[in-house]
Image 1: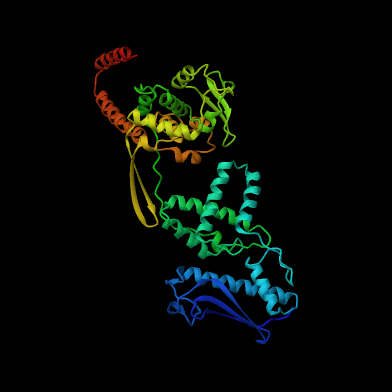
Image 2: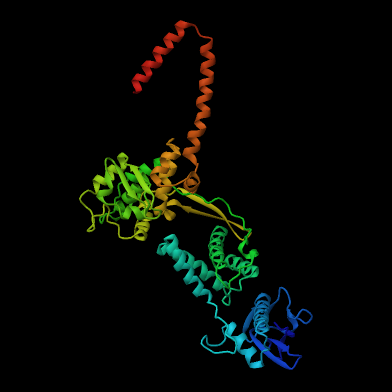
Length: 462
């Protein structure tokens, strides 16, 4: 392996402002300049560090470039130029001017992928190509549905919007910070930013296992350090649920509102997801319970049917769809829209206030429940009301299909009802304690008389 001495010097081209990199090698006998696709203003250029001054924004030829974009472009070219010299050194050859131009431009994707060049360099896949491969491999392995793939695709689109020139083998910590700042600038909530970054890091960890791709540890360990508040869990209280379930709509000739309300309430009385409600057939219902496998997780669900759930089933008996589904649901989105209208008509107008952060800015947003109610709120309603009534978490989990208490935790809201029931124990114990103290001082005849009175009152209420 030979040593090739070379030098690189970034500079601004004449009066145009285009950033170039002059390369000299072979004892300065060979020289070539590469011109990047970024421009800089001379008075914002650091002549000592040979890069754009920190914090500057450059306006050249009706174009705008930040100092980060300019310096990243310089770093990218430098890296590819060094890579070409390393490859040549291994092969004990010194590149000519044309060879260096061809190989660097090829590595940067500035020439046709089929172009020939003196030293064979395996073309690395583009960001999109690696994403498609990731979705194909992991999709099969983890059995992702189209919705899951769409979420990943959206996350990948974000990073390419934040940095259109990003390459899968050149991701740096600076790219991650730039992505975070892009999210904040585009008004994404911190919770969403963290979720999207986590998905991206999953891709990068997979990418790190591929030959020829090495993702820096600092990137894999990147944290946004953004403040996130607990999410406001939306659900109906038990009295609200019963009000909604039995509300009589005055103007509902087509039955759209009552049907949407009934389907939603059936989910609230059974914990079914809308994907499972949509595929519920008569064969899934027997011996007073629903027995089926969840579409999303594959978990076996065994759900006893309450009287309210049975009432809704009886109402739609004989109205199965052409495919023998119990409920004829056009689409989850149409059901979601109709439920909002039904909730509004029924007066489900409790105010829901959510506090969240975008970057370091604290924001607050209030809405009426009828405006934000969704299909999934029915499942949250089942969990919250069940726990509020004292049903053990283990029993609730058998109905919902959750594998552990932690996975069910996001659905739990210890709000008015649950807290009131728990705090009532303080009152009961307080009264018990006072009664016991008084009884200790009472004689036998008084206790016998008191016992008879209590038995009579209990008999009256039975």
